[in-house]
Length: 311
Image 1 (cartoon, rainbow, N blue to C red):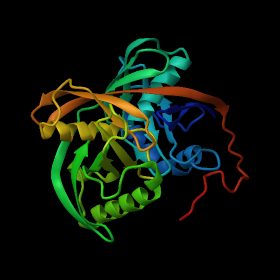
Image 2: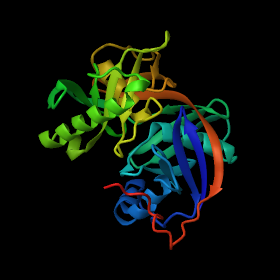
Image 3: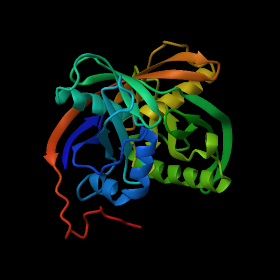
């Protein structure tokens, strides 16, 4: 299986160029469902240790249904197949450029949740015009053991997020373990409360916000992903959901640009366009760098070929 690795603002992406399972020729959503239900061992093996690494997101390049798109993509991490991935899309654009498939300019990429646009400014700098994003609930209260009452918004940016505007734990690199544990407790409380997005959408990403640590930054975030790894980048879909909340509260005007910091200090430039009273189109600009071209060899006699499972 041929893969190309990259990182987007510190967050790793692995693109499967060839050698993945045949997912048929249905819609991207249908093919994503096949990957999720019939090939879990496969996708886990690609991004989990010992073949992958913590926090890695995988991407299957597939033929798009929409002929105006340069590629179709299906995203996954060690825990689940996911609908959209902002850092992954930036990584895909840089990877396609590295492969000679696209050049500087604007291109369309088809995902399971819709078509997104990427604008390649140079070999590494990419702006993603994401899918329509919106806030569903404001100031939902959760009682968290050992923490107290936490208030957060439920919002969609390609995945469903619970966004805590005032983190109960300072968002600094030295607190990553504590931030992770608190975020897991918040997600557990969401499950107990049976809180979901539209049509039962699973809220499997948690975002905690704190003050920026750099002069030009708007805020700093900690993002817990479905596999309990934290996002090294500021999280593209999480930033999209955040923009929807800022827009709904009139805290950010259309086209106004802000710098969103990640836990480790990397950043995205963010802005949005208003579509309806409760829906926006986010714009996310970041950088990705190709780090590796490799052939993955899954030895059938390797007892860890499907990844290390701790539970």
